Amino acid sequence: MEGKVRTSAYFVIALGVCAPFGLEAAVELQPHRAYYSVSMVGRPTLNTNVTEVRGTMMLELNKVCGGWTVQQLSEIRRYHDDDTVEHIRWGYVTFEADDGSHFMFNTFRKTDEELVEDIRGTAGKKGKLIEAFYQKPKKMTLRLPEGVLFPIQHTIALLKAAEEGGHMFPQIVFDGSTTEGASQINTFIGAQKIAAGNSASKEDRPFVGQPFWPVRFSVYGLGKTDYEPDYVTTQDLLSNGIIKKYVIDDGTLKIQGVLERIELLSKDEC
Image (cartoon, rainbow, N blue to C red):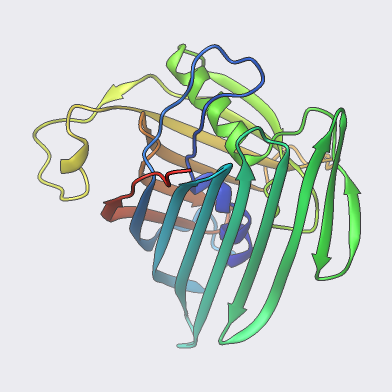
């Protein structure tokens, strides 16, 4: 399951900048640092010996000169029915230019303190040519499909579609979290809701009265013929780009992240 959680980095990130590609309106989001508690909420099948998952995830979104940076750090322990425990640490750091022309990515994953994955590289657009250049785990170049979006571009367009009442939003996205290139992301956007004012939950209190959408991402590898997605991620996405909670389902385990604490950040003065 850690691989699926890792791959879904972007899908627990809601980002926004001034809209490119001629979009009529900008999506104004709040830079922030959010802390989530992570736990297992279900096992869709019995094909796993994992009995519990516990951990934390920190997500930081910062507006810097020329673009946005994202840092995500997860620390998870998976408990097995033979009384063994896996300690998994995962990190994801990116920079994306405001105009979507340049993207830098760095991913690592450790299991029981052993480095098992280290991915680094850049991607860029020159006209219709879009390429990803990996430095690690080995040097290679991937040509990405025409029309592919980087994470910030995708989320801007997604939030704009939500604001306009859209419900289906299929796109191809490259987030740099794997060496397999881009993914097909089919997103269902639920009806807008308003955060209730009678909730006693501490993670809900800062959002009382704010609109949000329940969204569901189904993620498929490009070129694969499987009917079922590689994994599915759902989240409650507020209009300011903050995620209240998320669930990742890979068909074997369901992992939930619930917002526990948030720090609002200011934008860098350029």
